[in-house]
Amino acid sequence: MATVTQALDAIRGRLGSTASVGNGECYGLASWYESMITPTSTVGLGAGVGNVTGAVGDTIKAANIGTAYNWTANGWTFGNDFAVGQIVTIKGTASNIYGHVVIVEKVDASTVTVLEQNYAGKRYPVRNVYNRAAYKQTVNHFINPPKSAGGSNMGAISQNGETYSSLTTHFNPNIMYSSLSKGVTGYSRLTIDRIVIHHNATTNKNVAMQTWYESSGNWTSAHYEVADNEIWGCVGEQYSAFHSGDATMNRRSIGIEHLNATGAPSWTISEGTYKSSAKLIADICKRYNIPIDAKHIIPHKQVSATACPGGIDMAKLIRMAQEVSKGVVVTKAATTQKPSGSFRVKVSVTDLNIRKSPSLKAGKNGIVKPGVYTITETKQADGYEWGKLKSGAGWIALKYTSRL
Image (tube, rainbow, N blue to C red):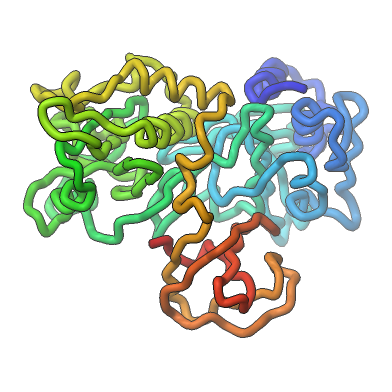
């Protein structure tokens, strides 16, 4: 079994050659990639180079690869935004009813780089870069590789139009300072290649986050607040937050704040906070192709004259993030909102269907009214994350809710 990195490298090794992979179709490349990662799979997409048949044709379209094959039985999962190593299916159009399928090589705040075949008549692997937001509108399914291959359920999600890690357990709904704030100019994003580590200098996360509200007048903020078994989304990754004290660094980095477990002078953080942060860092680095090392994961004091990040052990944090990236299990609890698995969501739309089971094909049990609801279980199906209502009424698509 190849890892995601090894499988991507195999495709990269064929760039520049005009030799087709398999049958030269887009799904021929996807089939080869899938067969390297899960060689004994029953996905049904096909086999290796020279023997790729797939099943796409008169009845099954490339656009429908996400639902036409047995992915979940082989460890693949569905996501809702781009992540490195995914197989991504593209919707059909009037001029191309069969759609398309690509493999994600790289993702940053504004672009997505894919490896694809049978693009513009080129029946061999090529690399193309697309506008991330525009390309996302064409996607039918995001299919994540298994954790055992170096893939994971990590990735990006959209929360009210803002990009966050899928590991985020909570979202702070208050408006915080960012490059979107009134009067801010010349603060557009640069290529994200740094993560800046901060501490709250308080043992109360709410006090810390309140200082980032636009209503505070402080002109400071961060992308994430990490606490014991919690990851709070504060400012979307596609926007600059005001966290480092240096305008250029703010534009090229993601700022992560950490809740302190003890006060002055030690300002330590808990083991649970280390673990949550390590997972978040590994996810961000994977999505933006950032090396997990001391050059790219830096303390606030390296940028500005400050004692921040207090007592955080940078070497330990980086080492833990490296372990997560290599597939070493840190702890499941670090990205679970509650030990029971339950959490609350807010429904604002007025036409969200309740399904009898977690599937678009399932029958309806009416419509859920706007309000706050408790979710007791989640499942992935048909390219959506579904949540089971505590009332027992059925399942709703969590894409149309916001977590509290």
